[in-house]
Length: 372
Ligand SMILES: Nc1nc2c(c(=O)[nH]1)N[C@H]1C(S)=C(S)[C@@H](COP(=O)(O)O)O[C@H]1N2
Ligand SMILES: [Mo]
Image (cartoon, rainbow, N blue to C red; front, side, top):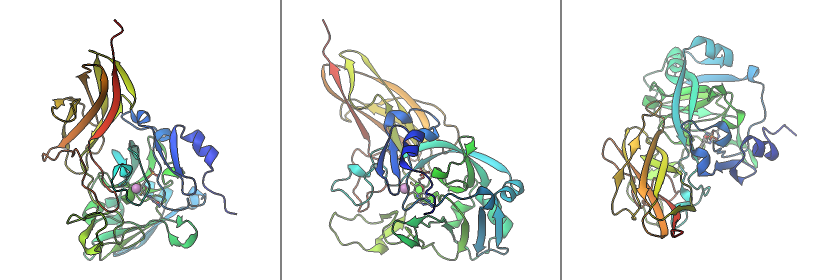
């Protein structure tokens, strides 16, 4: 039997506090209080795999092939790649397009993520643009196709996931081939030795265990890149309606969103006290402009302090407070707005695969009666 990349007891010790959904593919997300840091530690970072983890491999033997619509197809070793190109670090949010899927009603197929399939890390690597320019991108190239050795569970002949990027995003300066995360060699669980970092794009675009990039003359059509996979309807679809793949477009830039990391669900405060609220806000292409809080079901909103992010694709810390008021149940809400004026919705619009849920989060607690 080939050696599996990681066994469950080791995962539990590497990532304590993560809720594990799927032991075969290893899919896991943290409780939200573990996300209360500007840079998410590797130990708290969610993991998402569409198939079997690849076998453990020798980094020195790892190669990355660049082929397809290029003038000079190339095969890189890790060390050659690192020597040939400038090393850059980008702080960026990585969020699964299915994060928050469990909130859709009616329920959709797919992993029933709560709200923790997101994190913000420092990614270090080389610019994908530099590697592609070195190979010479032909004018016929419109899309990249990314490949990795992981296979579907029980179907060793089928890739688990092979996605790509529109050429404009592939050559954008923020897009990397990363080999480090938070200053450490990229952990195998997060795609080491090499993965794509596509800031602002859904996690599915961040190919792990990258071993080949093939430039295409059309939108890439690898595994999980067809039909309704990682696509949103262009015109709204009602639950139960037949689906026309022509009505679906690939998810690119993620919508504006926020996450309350403090207090947690089930919080208790005294009547008349002040509730201190903290969390993060982020978005895909359009910068975050403001975050507001509500303690009255969204009737009134008050602004909060918003810190600068570590870079344009990092999440931004917000802190604010709300008066607790009278004893009883209390629901906190935060909503972020981007520079184009787009706000998180109070209720997300339903889509058949349950993607891109950026609905305003509710954190529920209780205001206790005063002791006197
Ligand atoms: N090779 C490969 N890359 C992959 C996947 C996969 O299944 N196989 N899953 C993608 C999805 S859907 C997400 S959300 C991110 C998750 O990255 P993480 O496990 O490092 O958090 O990896 C992406 N890259
Ligand atoms: Mo994902």
